[in-house]
Image 1 (tube, protein in one colour):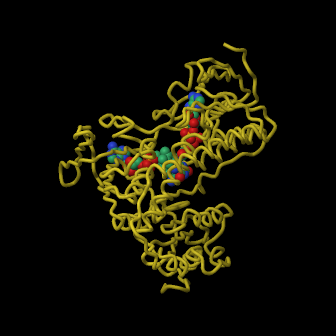
Image 2 (cartoon, protein in one colour; image 1 turned 90 degrees about the horizontal axis):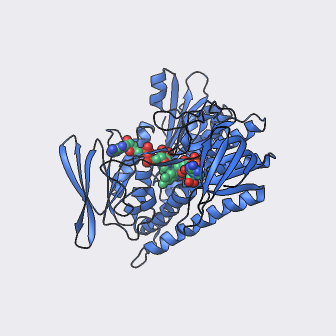
Image 3 (cartoon, helix red, strand yellow; image 1 turned 180 degrees about the horizontal axis):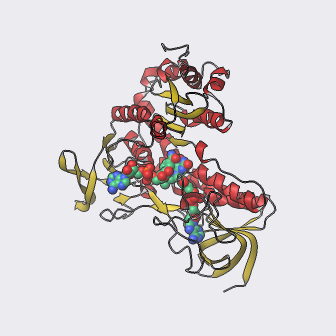
Length: 480
Ligand code: FAD
Ligand code: NAD
């Protein structure tokens, strides 16, 4: 055991929430340490958390590779481009993804160095008096004391008791980002964000993909029309999404040298069976708070294991804060970024703040799905009077020229004040377009403001312009 080392700020976890907190704290002149336990595929420490190692970035790398492959068979012909015998080299595709991951996880280590954040590689446990004991990978232990401690421990996949992860046949995101060949039949439990994104990756590369979703509604959190359009497009692509499917059994059986998973589930038609070669379980994530807190810290966990915090991410224990996936709110990297920065600024005496009303959601499928603010259903339930205008990409010259006419933009504004309350999009490139809605809402703008802003022609963003005009039934390029 070494002597205690003192810091102004000790951050536990170097994922999106933790590394933002650490870098911002160091920028503000605070002596900062950041601890992370994770190892990369090469067995060496890898900073950046779930997002950079096995989440946002690797999944987008595979989504982009598989989209190129899919477009060869489904879009290129329309452009008059032909080719012989398109093949996917899965090893090369995974290798490209791993290179990107290494570039970005290494990038965080460089940013720590540049900003004078001291990294510690190992597992941290918080003890009374803001002391964090770190069990390092070589077995040694260091003790850090922080005037402030920021918990940014992130989240882990939820495991179903009847479908335990084995890292090969039954996997979570980690395994599904590293298949060595395209599974002939891929089963997915959960039609949420991970199920749809990773299901799309392997579908585009040739797998037969069946997604079993327990709820009767598809993408219940999204705008109902957006969900309906997305479901229609996914069906056209051959993604088989079964709703109201309650899985009760997943048995791994050997078939020759291979293994397969025999699933039993019930839906409206009764008991069903499904046999697949690989099973991805994507039924949500839970806070990674196991062994994080000694008994005497005073920091409280809720019934789901999340660290309890107030609206400023403070735990109620002097100098102890928590941010990112391990606290309430959406499990999104950019939500963690903002909380990390806000807490560092609050510690430095600045007015740190996160506006939960303008956090965008994006699902990176084809078409992409994105939204910010309230849905029509939410506003109806809350009794808020609203008006909505929508505009289809099929009437947008740029989208049609690209061969991507699916989807639409919907702008929702308050019926009396015209203030924008939500924007819902499905279509090509909407992961970028949604930020017009975020900006408008952040600046408390109106649908009329959006309608009066000059949008370049021909661009996809014109769909937002016309949708904003449609709010008052004055869209130019469609009948109102
Ligand atoms: P994490 O990223 O989970 O990082 C926590 C870190 O803390 C980890 O490195 C962990 O090893 C470390 N740690 C935990 N406990 C300890 C401890 N006691 N001691 C030391 N270290 C510890 N979000 C988006 O916004 N956009 C996306 O496109 C997106 N895609 C995703 C795709 C997938 C497949 C998955 C799984 C997630 C995706 N997410 C996406 C969600 C996103 O990854 C998370 O919201 C984000 O990583 C949370 O950041 P965090 O810093 O709170 O936690
Ligand atoms: P999710 O909450 O998005 O979806 C889980 C789905 O599984 C839900 O539709 C749920 O109804 C269903 N489900 C739950 N239990 C089930 C069961 N027993 N049988 C069948 N269906 C069941 O969770 P996820 O897809 O695992 O993703 C986890 C988190 O990661 C999400 O909260 C999301 O915020 C984050 N993420 C974000 C992105 C992105 O921003 N593009 C991408 C991937 C992951």
